[in-house]
Length: 246
Ligand code: ADP
Image 1 (cartoon, rainbow, N blue to C red):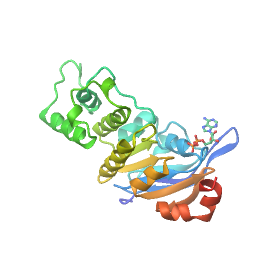
Image 2 (tube, rainbow, N blue to C red):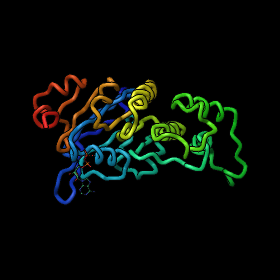
Image 3 (tube, rainbow, N blue to C red):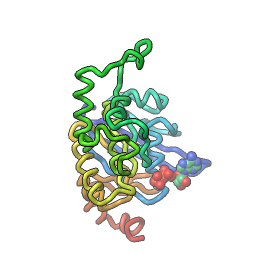
């Protein structure tokens, strides 16, 4: 359907007989941010691994952009369809400038000797500038990535993912290790991205989830325990008993 970017339908996967994901169904709408919370071992990472094709489920389907069943595709094919994943640790080219990091990440036509004869087109330059504005790094465009703060490196990597023009961005605990003001900026940044793209954020930090101000799914034992606003989810008696009340 046109109002669905991602649809996990009855997905299950077991490791040595242990059901890490158990009949999980989740919908992510176009231009929607969804926050996934849940205790350690709830299956959050495994869910992301299934979406990106790193882990193949034993049962269920993962429909992307209305039609494609991702469970039949490999990781590279899934990434090419327009799914970007940001892992917890930033991975940027430390010895390159901020600008070059984004430029290197741009999707470019692959001819013969693509890098040898490549010069950024006007459109590429405009796109890089726009991305640097989005990720709050326009003023650091000539800095080496190595000289950025931890938070800025996280933003740079988000910028590199944006350069790939994903329809769906998966983000794993983006604010771990960030200062309070970086955390606040990251919430704003992800919200601005979700105006045009779908974003799934896995997060432990409840004050950050509150700042995201978006729909929340609480996973436990590989299934949806509760969903709704953060207030609705945190008022759910089972969530309080099993998770928040620990
Ligand atoms: P979360 O990210 O919510 O903390 P995970 O998805 O990492 O949870 O893990 C869910 C459960 O599946 C855990 O009990 C974990 O030990 C188990 N698990 C995850 N990946 C594997 C694997 N490759 N082999 C065996 N068990 C795994």
